Length: 406
Image (cartoon, rainbow, N blue to C red; front, top):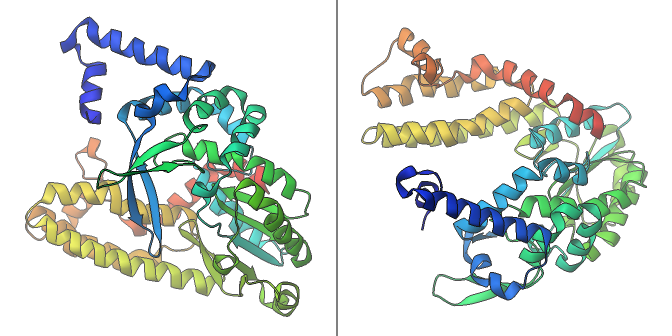
């Protein structure tokens, strides 16, 4: 049964009292999973997942597609325990459901790098982090870090579950979290708290978003932090990959950085590097990064415009719910990009919207399409007009979180 059928069974009046009885049964089962340890043998069918692979370019990300029932239970628990999970994760781990957490991480890292006292910034890439998490240690720590959340995690993760392949065979999930489980990000985020606290002894400023960790400060302290995360991390299932990690150094400190980090395999740069969908570094690097992203989006928008010739509604839905959200995030996390969006707005105005309408559009029509749908518009906003406003709105919304990090 898919999610639409489940939604109908749980909300429709067509089934009479059966709807309430089903809802109450699920609620009782969810409550039991949260307050008592259940024989995992009875949960095998609930926890089994269909395993698929997503192309990471390069690499493969394994995703477990679980039962709708499991997702209903997981979302209910996450919603009810939202505050407890956020408090357990602390202010430095921003992937525990905090509002605008990824934007706060991007703003915090940028401010820390631009600080005059900062000599360098480390961006760590961990090897297959979600799947390498030490499950036994994480579940044991969870009993102390977030007791109210721990029992359902133990019920879900203490025993291996089946990951079913396309040919009907299966493998067992023995370590890590199931990517696709809606409890996984909260589970992983809280499991890193012990590591974050141990690393706090180094005089560096840390920011974490799930397995993407970063630290800024003086180079000598950054080397201590780097050595410590390589010593402590593996015991918890966190394996830093030096070849994919970056140290962004301010130009005047490059020579010292080469001496301090020379024997490591970490990459050094004075230009900048991509971080959580934005760019951190020199103005020239950020500009180049934004220009390349916009060129990619223009090509994707042109392809979507071809679809609009035969399926304008589908093309509009793809634009609204997927494609436009990519540049909305970039403008909310990257400063001074207003002029860079002019080619994209030109493509929207001269290619995409005419294909949606099936004819050329004038300035008046373009102004109407910018309006929200509740004002009879299409919510096809002008990225040039809103970029500065969106960036400032994001900064204002994440001020308290950034202050807690810095």
